[in-house]
Length: 244
Image (cartoon, rainbow, N blue to C red):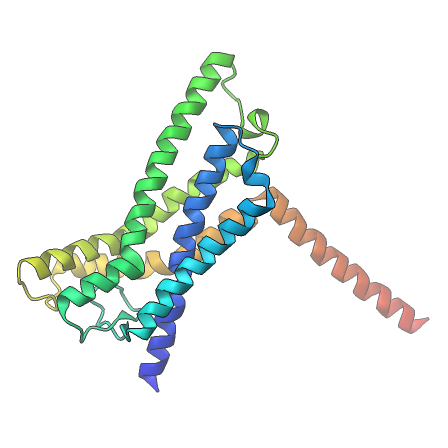
């Protein structure tokens, strides 16, 4: 049934988006604590377990609460582009509330936290490079627990802003219309343009994250290539043994 498919898709995208926001913040905090404060706590088992519990557990709880309240379904493209999310048949204030709880509130919080982290880390590195007269100073030279590739994760925040800001703008327009009692289903030209940009941006985030985490990361890229080569070598060895 199309309604059930829409609900399942809403559950999956809500959980995955919340998990993505959580991991984005945790990665930023990890870099901050390790680089600036030289903290060893981020390397402990308990910190890793806690990070996984928060980044997977909290999104799961929020998603399940939304499912229990039956708020997921066809949203009539109010603020999610082509995807299903919060049911459009709910009252407008209910839609705003659940949009905030199950996504946009956490997304905006991620914008704020990562913007602060970027400014703080940038200021710290500039000050450190000037003090040590080392304009090319890298993360790995400051902390043994960081790699040069970890600096690429800062780019993840800009990718997040660039791809998801359109949906956040539509969320703001929707909230404005609800507060001022305007027709929330009347899509003007600006909202239509933002909807198309959101449709591209929200769908492209996972692909861009894959490029940063897998393709651009030297350690991960070499690991993938090594495993592929080992499998090919094992297959050739099995074929050789069967022939002989």
